[in-house]
Amino acid sequence: PTGALKPRRGGGVIMDPKKCGSCGNCVRACPIGAVMWDEEANKPIICVHCGMCVDYCKYEVIKLEEVGSS
Image (cartoon, rainbow, N blue to C red; front, side, top):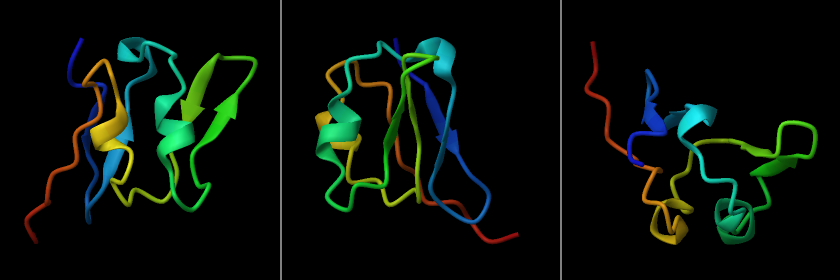
């Protein structure tokens, strides 16, 4: 699936957990340890929105886009 993460106002992303494959690659990819794993939901808790995890998502559900100023 695609589109699990949507642009967040001001930059970064917001995750739609229904589209996440629960692989955990985003947690392992985060260089600052900002993506946490929610054991109860079996999904990641997305972080400070730096976008470093985008290239590591094997399901290609993470997308980082620049958000234009309003």
